[in-house]
View 1 (cartoon, rainbow, N blue to C red):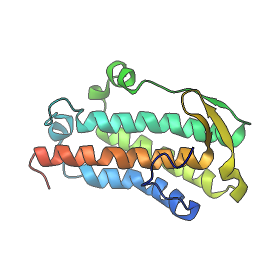
View 2 (tube, rainbow, N blue to C red; view 1 turned 60 degrees about the vertical axis):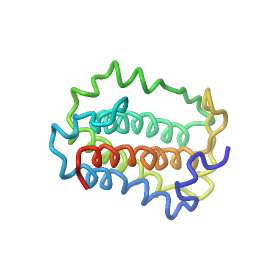
View 3 (spheres, helix red, strand yellow; view 1 turned 120 degrees about the vertical axis):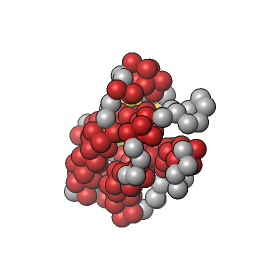
Length: 165
């Protein structure tokens, strides 16, 4: 499988800092939003900013586990998850945006520290995803970066709909 998110860096030297920096970028993106604006659904049929942040935090927990297991185990099995069920059953609208960002930031710092300690050949370690097939450690980190890159425009869309720059 090639880079699943072409907007994620190819070079490890660029990938790890980008991975670690994204929580701060999300915090800056919502820094001037009120709790009401974060909870609002200004775009018909789309999640609120709070739901997006909750989704990113939950997804990042799954990706962090996948990354750690790929490093520590030989070809571990990675199981997909249903993001819609997570959103509907895990109380995304009852969560706190600051807590979600803090969880994401802490996880990213912890995993980045591990990633920086790896040997170059470690990035080719493989896991078996039940839906995607073989994935490498590098691809998993690219997925994590690409996932935030994918959702940031949705937060910008909500900001614009709310009249924020």
